[in-house]
Image 1 (cartoon, helix red, strand yellow):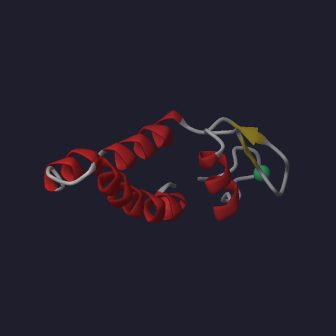
Image 2 (tube, rainbow, N blue to C red; image 1 turned 180 degrees about the vertical axis):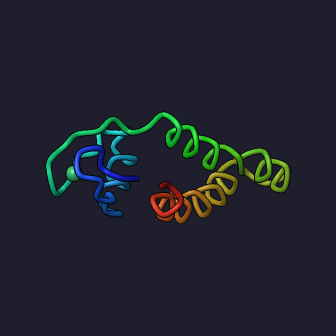
Length: 88
Ligand SMILES: [Zn+2]
């Protein structure tokens, strides 16, 4: 993702912080321009995070919900960490 003001790519830190803080507006470290987190990217995040749920529920059908939650977290945490690389 790039800054609308100066065209500089947002740093990994800027993007991940925005996602973790419920899509707080992105603020460019260079020129200070604030930008709303793009709807398209929010959609992408939602899909990537929700997509594995049915798979996990199906494969851990007999397991306790706690184990299910654990498996899900094991998936979601690394995925969230690489998300900023997936967005342009
Ligand atoms: Zn900028």
